[in-house]
Image 1: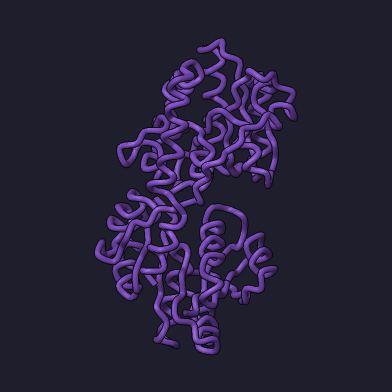
Image 2: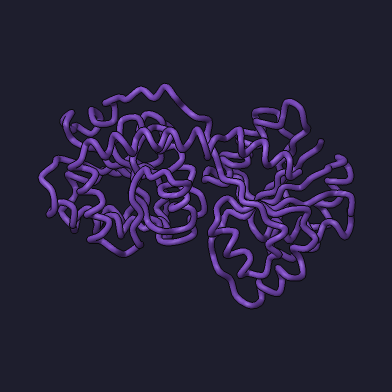
Length: 359
């Protein structure tokens, strides 16, 4: 089978990790291609692995010029399946079928955003032409249906990671930050973008300091346009000795294996977080906002490995953290449940099998 993965920005976020996981799983037995508009870490990594790359300008979801060029590439390389990420890429892939009809178009929705009437009717018109549609969480499926997509076209196929049964805890990050061994370390891996709610996080930690005497610190790993604004907010709140900004890091395993609790403070646009999956795989209990697939991860499948609160509920989020900080037995129980949940529900091998069946 010849599969072309279509993505606008080939960067370093969760969707790019999703694509890379699939390419690396299929490339030995199938011919995989990557088509992208803006180059980044994903295109660099796959290019180094010898994956054929095709850079294609995609100005908007109805870019006929892009659709024609995509169709020509698919015809020249006898592509069987286009696997599109996000609505723009999906529409362009569907339009390309006007010029090369043999290709199937599979679309994965990584969004949990309601849209307007224009998108509703566009979905009604376009998505029946999809071979199949994948949602990475239940809320994403429900929102797609409300956005005009036929539910019979949609399957929920959860993101996944390779289960790690040999997590080795370390103190490297605590030592790097100059923290005492008994300090509880709360970690978040997130871009400094509005939807990640890092301003809310600062408010939560300010509240938490008033609620507990347990020594704790917070580490934020990531970069983005709001980095300096969040730094100013941390200083203004007097939390410079509590919240540490690590910047962009590539050693997420070291960070997670050196942490005690994982946080997700997203405001919106969260589907099924790879960062939460990796944290669960490291045996971390999770406190997260009730956004996208967070509840699927933390509370779903009759296996609880943390707490879910509403975005903006500073007191509720802070109290959930205090509960975990002060209850070592609960942390240990959630830790074991998190690992078991990865093995049972969010195993990457299940994702790979289910996506291939979809093709």
